[in-house]
Length: 221
Image (cartoon, rainbow, N blue to C red; front, side, top):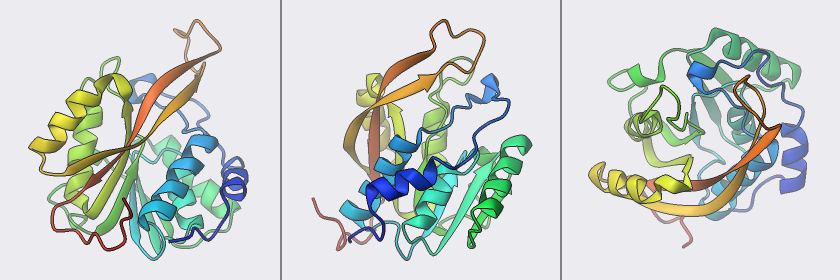
């Protein structure tokens, strides 16, 4: 389950991805920092083998940070899903500039994906969902439900550490096995007018949710 690229090299590639030009607060648009994205993806592959040779979905993909990173670590095909047409356009441009095949972006409402042709179409789902602050209360858990409906093996997601107990209980209700892979310090740069500080650190849990009946042979606890 060795990753085909070293962590440092992966982060260097991801630093070249263009982010949001005009982030939308209602969508809680924050670019996943390259350092966090590379650490997440490297862990997914090196510890669990859930990227190389897999079909991967990226929910709320934004400009493509996780989608492109998953491809760089050997995903056979990656599909990003994004509701914002501006972000989708940046995603497509990033893919073109990096000359990356097998990475697509679907412009759609993520919450409407269950019961579509994408149901159970992916081995692995990765996402950095809206945390559900502001006017999007509970949005991260709605994204998790969608991810579970699309994946056959595992869903990887970020959630605020302060919601850990709630996430664990929700996972039990959704009949998936939750595991906190790591606790991260998520640096949010000042992107909106209401931000008083240039940046703020938020404690975030990086979760793995294993689906029932998924193969565990590749998982090293």
